[in-house]
Length: 149
Image 1 (cartoon, rainbow, N blue to C red):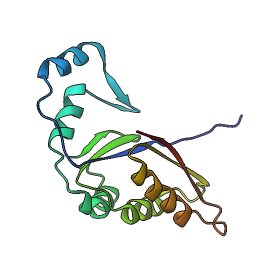
Image 2 (image 1 turned 90 degrees about the horizontal axis):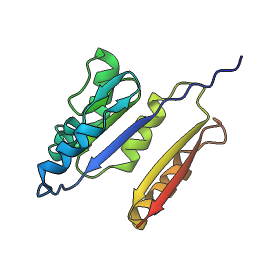
Image 3 (image 1 turned 135 degrees about the horizontal axis):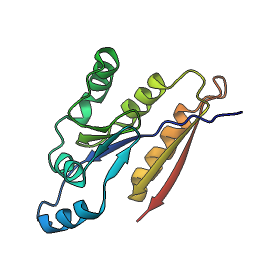
């Protein structure tokens, strides 16, 4: 029987946060939603708190992920387990993001989906990065899935 194994990792880059949103909205969500990230659950409150004050700067992404891989210690900005959400403080350095993704992929990975919802100019940058980091020689392809507003 053929078994397809997939890994989902989400990197969220927070450049600003509207802390005027009422805590009541989060409380209502907490009653109805329990988020699951593969083998570890986290609450809406934990996600909101992490997004409100991301503990690790985006420029420290590579060092943080390498340290996690070496030590097995979960960084403070990671929610979930094997399939995870990382919340970073600051704008993304796309070259760093893509090079980290390439360096941490299992050797037999052929396809990486890059999902994005946001401003069109960022989508254009991501499209360039997908093309730059795709490799015919290594049979590795990045594909952008985007929605602009």
